[in-house]
Image 1 (cartoon, rainbow, N blue to C red):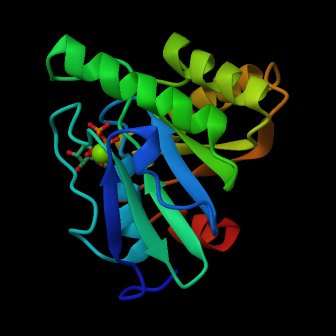
Image 2: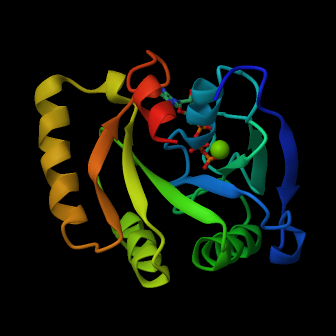
Length: 191
Ligand code: GTP
Ligand code: MG
């Protein structure tokens, strides 16, 4: 993953619009506003690649980016509260679930959890979906710059406890701040 090596491929609004499953991909899932698009920008070193904003519900399509010749990075719409009309939200939530449970070439889902909030009910629901689809997932804590160390440790304990109930969870948690660049090289190496 190097800057300049990543390009936007397409935004997908229905399963039949997915690019052919001809290369491995990883995706970034998480509640609206958790920092998925910003993390992709930090990982690729391209500030405006994935559109980010302070409004929950910014990403409304499944966005595919190339990562080198052989991989895709996939930016997903958020789940949970979104600032968009309900029928629209329901449509993209359905698509999100279909994608997470039915994409052959999906090698790992990164489930982003806000370092201030920990694992919520909707996160557990998505993790259970990944369990039943046998998609390995790994938790990435985001916005670590917004919490003090003691608070972060408390949240980490809560997350570890939640993960112990999910067979598809990869045990290592990556703590990141896209703002400060923390954990970005580690996550790049994992990808
Ligand atoms: P949706 O597309 O709506 O689901 O949101 P998203 O998960 O893609 O979040 P996005 O990347 O748009 O970021 C949401 C807000 O959080 C933006 O205002 C970002 O600048 C901010 N943000 C993201 N990552 C960090 C971080 O590491 N630290 C801080 N302080 N802010 C962050
Ligand atoms: Mg987004």
